[in-house]
Each structure stands twice: as structure tokens, then as C-alpha cells.
Amino acid sequence: MGLSGGVDSSYVAYLANKYKLSPFAVHVDNGWNSESADRNIKNIVNSLGLDFYRHQVDWEEFKDLQRSYFKASVIDIEVLTDSAIFSFIYNLALKKNIKYQLYGMNIATESIMPKSCNYTKTDVRNIMAIQKKYGTREIKNILFINTLQDKWNDLISKRVSKINILNYIDYNKVKAKDILKEKLNWEDYGGKHYESIFTRFYQGYILPKKFGIDKRRAHLSNLICSGQITRKDALEELKKDPYPPQLLEKDKKYVLGKLGFSKEEFETIM
Image (cartoon, rainbow, N blue to C red; front, side, top):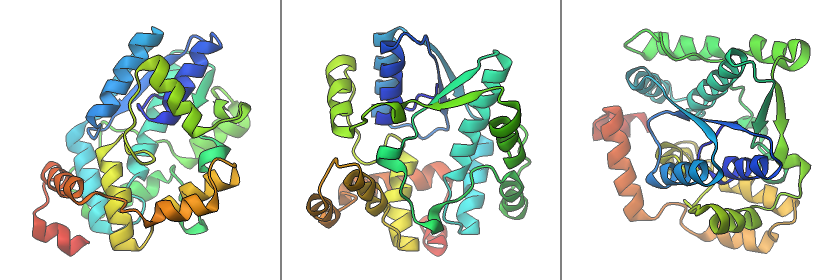
């Protein structure tokens, strides 16, 4: 079971414990955790008494990959994190002979996305082509899961069965947050997937400013269709600033510094 400290994975941990499934929780740290994410992970693991493993990706390699993706100006920079997480957890499950993997992906809050955003997370050939063109180092320590491996497991070998456990309940995000706060001392971090500083900067600034995409429209559409908010409430939410100016400046300075971009380089890329 992957554990990011976000609401979906945290609620999966809560349910797994409730149903006595003895989950083995794994966190793949790409170097971008917010303080609230780390606190949430610690509180959940301690409160539920979970078996837990934290894997730190090779930062220098990951940094070079992210820089390459910025230079390539592709929309889905997050494919690197997603693919690395899927690959590590899957291979760890094989190594430990674990037959089932609990996922936080669900229909209620994240099934709607425009066709232009439906990228594959398993095109390793594309990842390496971008790295070869724009990167400065060979990637030796970070493994990505490719499309053939993914399809082979899902359709033929089925050595690790993926279970989207949140699809088996009436999953309501607000109620889930309330339960997590009450029982596990969980703290809210703002927007969807904002437990990661990079994701917050990517979704809140890079996507709308460079590509004209506001992912809140898709996320809110999901909540409307699953009856969790009204369309009127969603439209009011879209009027709000997705990124408080003070936080934006703080995150921008942090991201540029961590990735080694000057302001001039970054503005040229943007």
C-alpha cells in the first residue's frame, strides 16, 4: 500500500486497518514532501501500528530528470514521480511475495479528466528519450515501469492484483477528511495532491500559467458528478485564487533553488 500522506492514501490506510488487512505501507520519497505530508505519514503509521518502509529516490538523478522535463516543455512533468512510485511498489511486492496492492485511485474524486491530460505513466522509452536529449547524467538507480510490464501483470501474469479499495465504499472526501482528523490527527494541506510542494507548484502555477490548464475544473467536476458538491459551489471555488501570492513566492523560490534554475532560465522555460 502506497502512503503519501494525502487524503486518499491516508483513508486507504485507515480502511485497511479497520478491515484487519495487515497492510505493509510504503512511502516513495522523491524529495518534495511538505511538512504536513511527513507529519501525516508519521501519525498514521504510529496510530495504526503499520509495518512501514520509506524509500528515498536518488535525488541527483531525479533532479536531473525533472530539469530535463522542464526543458522539454512537456505538460506531464509528474509522470516521473508516478512511474517511479508504481515501479518501486510493484517490484517490492514481487520481492516480498505480496499478492495484493491497495490503491487510492477512485471513481468518486478522480475519474474525470480531459483527453489531452490522459497521459500514460508507463512510456519509459519517452522518459529516456527526453533524458538523453536534455539530461546531463545516466539514470542508473531509478527504475520506471514500462507499458509491457504493466499490461503483462494486469492482463496475464496477475502476480500482484491491484485493488482500488475506495471504489467499494461510498467515498466522500469531506467525510473522509473529518474521520482522519478525528482518529489519526491528520492535517489538511489544501488542494488535491498538494501534500507535495512540487505538485502544488506544478498544478497551481506551471499548468495554468504555461499551458492554460486549471486542474481544479476536472477535480471539481468529479465531485459534482459524485454528488459531493453542487455546480454552483464549484463555480464559486473556481473564482478563488488557486495559489495565495505569499505561498507562491515562497514555493517558487524553493523549487527553483532545489532544481538549480536561475530566475532567467525558468522564465525562458515558462
